[in-house]
Image (cartoon, rainbow, N blue to C red):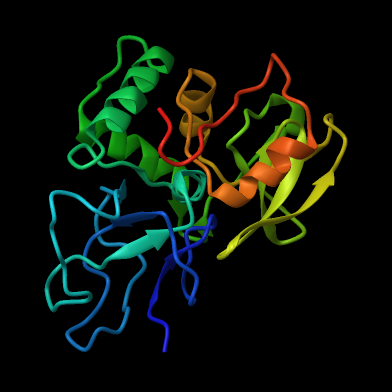
Length: 223
């Protein structure tokens, strides 16, 4: 039976047999029996490497943070997570550098970044979404269309699923869409942060020619 530990671009936690490329947490979400009783506990929502210094964890230990998994980094960012400052130090530094570019004179402290992201990702009604024109979104953003999550790639949309990206569709670049990726993270991507993508996104890369004005997210293992 699959554990409920996989995060969608909407920030929901679901049970699925699919495997993800990133690991992370948002605090202790389960009770002593391993049942999820909340969707978040702390503002520090992070996305980590699956392997780091040979560390091993027994899942869902009482009183320890709840282990979560993500299809890829675009999914984690859309849900409101950021790179871990320990196991993904280089990615975090790139993320923070871009963050400081879009917040000149602002704080680069991790707690302040987490506080700002928390305001943008959820409210009393759940996942926050914000409207934007599709043409204004960088590649690696994720939107909600027809109650589904879609990855933005070269002006086209790739349908998200726990197993990867599938259906490709296009809508007018002038269309206003509901964006899942928090506004500050959209700006971080625009400023040069390249989120890594699941290999299935390569279908979208091959299906549409790159544009000089759009961002080209890296594939897993790239820098």
